[in-house]
Length: 308
Ligand code: SF4
Image (cartoon, rainbow, N blue to C red; front, side):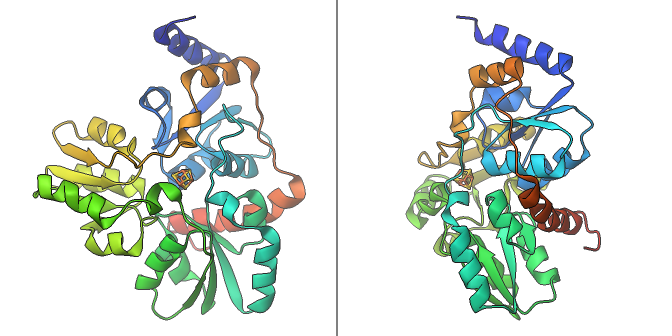
């Protein structure tokens, strides 16, 4: 059995030999975060995937992220170290149900969180991430919006976008939805000076008590810029590893149960195997990719502040 250091060394060698780039989400285990060429939230990763000149993209994250990279890079090989890392939130939209909802509301634009399958994206007008959901919904001309799949993120957007009717798909991320006000207050009682940063996938009552609501990328930026020293991290626990690296002089408290088991399916051993075999390859049928590319490109354009 090779040591962890040997596995890491071999991963770096194979990455170079294959002109590969490792993209990793902020919820990945520390060893993977340390090896990544680029670490970020869904929006930053989608932008990076579109811009890279590498021949192979190794995506350390979940299915929809790798699919998005494949959709944006038709000529490139996109691999994910474990094909079974399928985001349960993304699986909560059934395409037939969405088609029916669209028929019922023909005047509504469909805005789908990037945490959706390629098929759902292909049925959508716009994609968004937690970093730009408010901006995307604000910027579109339609007054009625079907928002999929996360009801908490959709309800969060509705707080800011008062002049549009938002029809919420009843999906949720179990990792965030299980966090309660009491989980946060328990930490706040122990650390009264700590600021609460919550992710918009948290329940509305958690959003109500948060000092700030951010995507994971927003949490990093805020922690770096803030003159506060202590923070309660209202998202997946591993986020604190990135925050501690970026801000070694600050303190981050996490909630023990905030774990996404799907993100944890990616291990060093599986990453090595993926680079050795250049598989499993993530592919999206071209007819679906062609349709899904439009809302993703619109999201990236809005994310960069371009006209969409
Ligand atoms: S944290 Fe939630 S949305 Fe993100 S991959 Fe896990 S289940 Fe899906």
